[in-house]
Length: 279
Ligand code: 76R
Figure 1: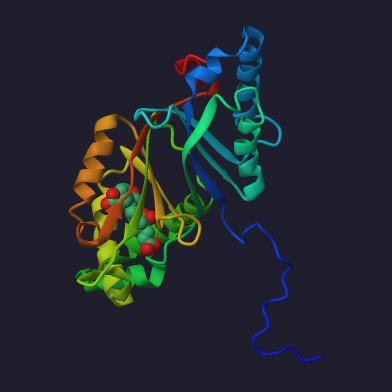
Figure 2: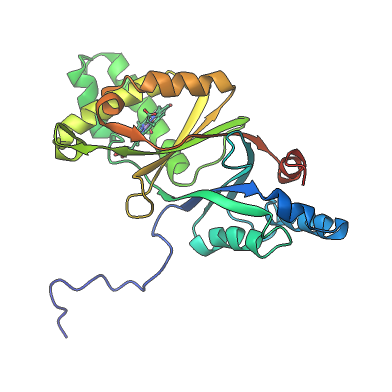
């Protein structure tokens, strides 16, 4: 039988994506009153359950899970969880709720997103075009050297965007952001070429922080109230302030970006984080 022209593709319905991972940022606050009501043996049990649940090396753990201790008062514990299966991620949230600490660790903020490769990451051809536009002569050996270096870097960079590893940095900063749709500054009405130029300026400004800050942009249009989640990891705290401040001057941010709340946190093992929380 002939398929009607607009039939959807014949792939089975699924909650997994064809590529990339689901991501959850989850922030929890200690309810001191609930904790005080637990007997010693219940506290010990809660600690044991949580240490086990959040252990990145346990069997069935999400592909990535990072624990941190949050600075601002809205939360005490921060979790960042990534996995191809959103129910494995949900298992962390439900596992906490169903544990002895279910009413002790109360979620106060969360952010749902997915990994992606931005449409503004230049292909090799676009990169070559940009070099030419910026005045590098294709007959100059430096031109070919840059192309070759980019060809080698791109697959690794794309792998890191879709299936990220956590960098070995002790500070994490998370915030959600949008590109605005204001009558006088509407990102979504700019032609692609203009947006690509603005994002190229943004990338050039960001690259200066290599080695001090590592970033992961996860997409949340349709998944959460903001369009992206920005996760930054810093080698030291001052780099976080500096990158966010500096990048506000990029035209893409200065004119078009708006930001939500910032959650700064200190990365620790689950056991150390729970100890820091005095649980
Ligand atoms: O990934 C890459 O390196 C390619 C270039 C690049 C893209 C496509 C890039 C580089 N970013 C890209 C996309 Mn970014 N980024 C932010 C923020 O605080 C702000 O002003 C905004 C929050 C920071 C701090 C940051 C850092 N970037 C994006 C997008 C998606 C746009 C889309 O797809 O529509 C957003 C929302 C966004 C926001 N960016 C870099 C950085 C840094 C540090 C870099 C350089 C990374 C490097 O070392 O290569």
